[in-house]
Image (cartoon, rainbow, N blue to C red; front, top):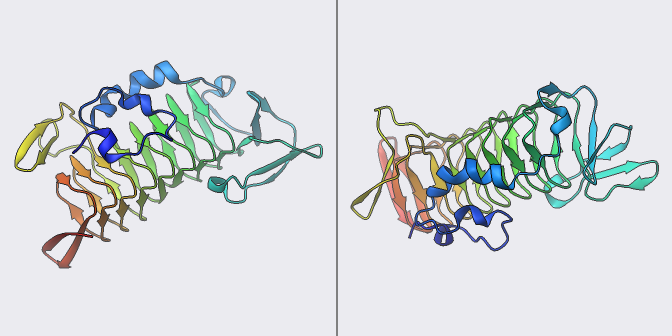
Amino acid sequence: MVGATELFELDGFAHKGLFDDVEYAWEGLSRLKGYLKQKLTPNLADLQDVIISETLILHGGKVIREKASIDTGDVTKGGLRVILEGEILDGASVIFAGASISGGDIQIGKGSVIEPGAFIKGPTIIGDFTEVRQGAYVRGTCLVGNRCVVGHTTELKSAVMLNGSKAGHFAYIGDSILGNDVNLGAGTKLANLKIISQDVTVRIEGKVFHTGLRKMGAILGDRVEMGCNSVSNPGVVMGKGSMVYPCVSVPSGYYPARTIISMRSRDVLTIRTR
């Protein structure tokens, strides 16, 4: 019901090993730091703790500082084109001047773009064909898959984004897991810390599950849609294909696949199945 294989299609995810032998999907959060330490292959070690002063190209495991022609196109669809001395550098990634790198334990995949003003702190893995937009704040212990978007002024902390997940604008993703092709509308907040001082729990069919986590945001199954300015309270688990309407505050708990959560009126929460 709330296992990783029930919430996520893992076959196409390069880091499905994060969820090996876990009973509940949220256990991946407690394993994340150790997994990154084991799997991460830094390719920005020479750039740690700097503000990038000139646009850099990553290609073939090397940092290229020569001036190249860059057409970003649609990054998540493989549209990035980098041309150096008349040659297209297949799989090249770009870190634009003005981005900030903190720590040497950062890995950037192929065909990805880090825009000016983005801040990335390790340990972090950024996958292939992924876009980290201007003003994004990647606070460390983050695992971002392929063809993802970490958007403008979006903050990502101790979190996982599976392939195709997008948080394009003004989002907070704390201690959370986003499944494949999840979309967070502008202003979405995945709250991760209870006001009262205790671990996060999840209620599933009347039974309370103790996660053992002081901080836990949301576990969103594949293709979940969160409307603009929606908020999930700590300890939300949503099944595949679920939808939250704009401006809704989602109580903690488990919501089966294809659940729709909306506000019928100002104070009435409506929950139904698609």
